[in-house]
Image (cartoon, rainbow, N blue to C red; front, top):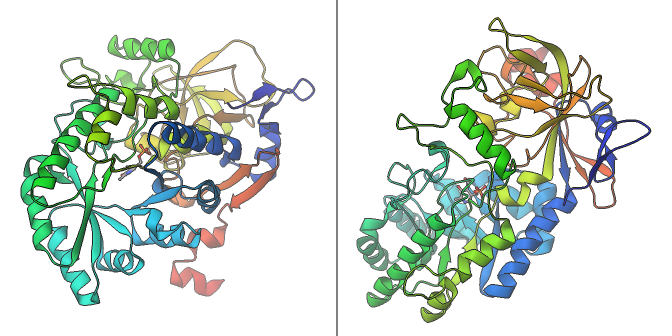
Length: 477
Ligand SMILES: Cc1ncc(COP(=O)(O)O)c(C=O)c1O
């Protein structure tokens, strides 16, 4: 649990014992602040629950969620493996000392170099799409080696399980091999002499808050294991990917906001019906999640779906294949805040409150993917009034869509120029699209240790860092 309180002397917000205003002044804003304690406790929830319920498992941190060396080192020491999505993430992960046997290689468009590096390092490749099978077989032949593979499957009958942009195993997905073709593709693998068949893989999407989706897919996979065995494909591993959601807001609070949006009750930018389809069904992320990593694992294995047998019992019946999970958001999402500085407080021509801050949506990029994703925000320093203030929060980029959320935020007072705002739960995918839009430098990232000490992990870019790739400009320097 994150410990936070207002320091009585300074009237500054402290989180895990560290003064957020002091951090903002020391490193500059925008600033990402990670909390070691929370990453560790999230990981331990997975580890303890899995050790209790299903020994043959592997937890692979999804490196893309927050690509930071210190996170990889920390999780590596705790025993984690990694899910990587490119040859670059792969090299970074190997450099952090994650053993190749604990790495899973994902991606729907893997380069030849990526495939070769995986084969040479003995890294398990989640094949995606089907066309990759022949390419991989050929690449392994050229190297005089064999490639160990899982088949990544998709096209499950899953509707509205999260935002469409991050739904990755349904009918409309660019990922995976259609599950309807699985039997033919399993046979094809057996016919390719430079592939070593290992297992099956799925990744349903991100911020999934519905256990039923996992159960439906796991049920299909368990049935498929029996079909695979009949043709001599021994499924040693079932990888269920990542996706476990987190709670950005409390249950009541989130339900209240959803119904306000449905009433077009002045809470969204330009009164858009964000997140709803034309049948008035909610079709995006849920921002309250009824489980945490430990209860997610317990439900996954101990719930029944068909035939009154738990998934654990059904997995025992098929020989206890290794279960791999690839969590990203649920390991790091709640373990980071972003500190931003207020530049102006005003109103839009339509009369809405608007606070302008010094971070664009490119540095809060979860909201590029899902514009309606709301984060709790709070003024970090001494504030003028105790009354809450409902407002849109705009970034510093030169386009109107640059809002840190398209839903109004409730602040703990009316901010003024120079105040700092804490944006909570930004650990996952916040610098996913980090760029130098309008030539702003990319932010620094610091880690607060369990002992309450801050350490810079990533430096804030300088003018030189922003422009040095332009060779003519660089010649002047
Ligand atoms: C293949 C794969 N595994 C795991 C993850 C992590 O998902 P999450 O952060 O929702 O746990 C992703 C995210 O996109 C992914 O693509």
